[in-house]
Length: 253
Length: 216
Image 1: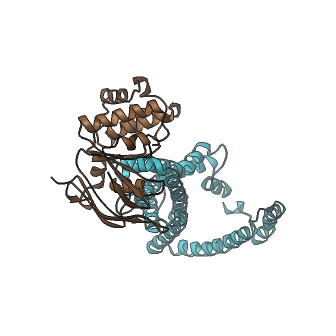
Image 2: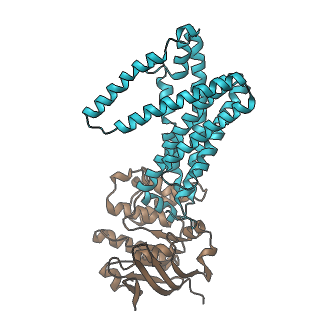
């Protein structure tokens, strides 16, 4: 199978030309993202190199403890990054951590129990990464949507509160919209999967020489698990986050 | 007799300025109190504090002899209903607004009662399912008022609710509010700049620079 994979360090070095094209366009159009692009490229190279070696070790050792530790590190990083979208919301890290942990944990346990994947580091770690990163994006979108809505829809919220609505009733429309926003990318990509993009899992398996009819089964599984994970993460994050927009006297901040 | 509201030394300040200074006021049940004063004098702030949408920086408010802090704020706000100046309607239709008071009380929508209330502010039954974008400013304000009183409150806090309305609509709103006060014992506390409302007030107070100036 591995004879299909021909990327080498020297091939990657020449692929730097692709980054140069992006940088050139950026300079020419005065977009001002050159620093972010270089930082992104350098970080990607360093992070992926480290992860490559770490995964090689974890797969070789095949220890439950190390596998779980790796999953926990992924979850922690996902929560930390999701928190950055919360724009100073109280407890955003803990809310994100709970949302990512429950969504990743539930999905992972169901996949293992259904025997869709085996509890081996080579399967559990990449699948956890996929789930947690999608949950992270969903939570980030939820936070951003809630911040905007609580700011822009201040008057209708006040009207509801003045009528005697409790915080949940006053916020229900905003919470619903934020959950929708969090799940939208997953639903959109589920609708166009195979038509617009051949997603990561499927592409990886086809690259590695797996029969595409087998690869699609994995991709279908991934689509299902991401739907579950992003919905669980969005619901938990939104329902725990909305009370932060009110003070102890149940007034809109 | 215990006053319905007793405000003692109410102060309110933001980080920028002091809005209310030592407000002392009593309001009896069934009263119709009019609060007037120049723009920025703290009238709306005082009303919002009484509605528990804001909390006084200092001082005490007692409602029915008990401090506001002892009340469940959601139950209190159902009983002491605050109506905004230029109320904004939410959702898509008039129905979305008039059904909301039922939703928050876990009760089924009473269409007959809602239509009757709409007719009292001279809005016909065809308005119930009208999109809110098709309503004029006066119609929106009347729908908002009906939304506040579908479950008759004990107190109605009116924040310049007739501002910007034409003379006919003002008359309709005044009749509706007066009816609530005279026939349903709803205590009215209204903030206004309107000369007619000031001249016909039963009980008038004036706020200037956040201080209570005149009691007539």
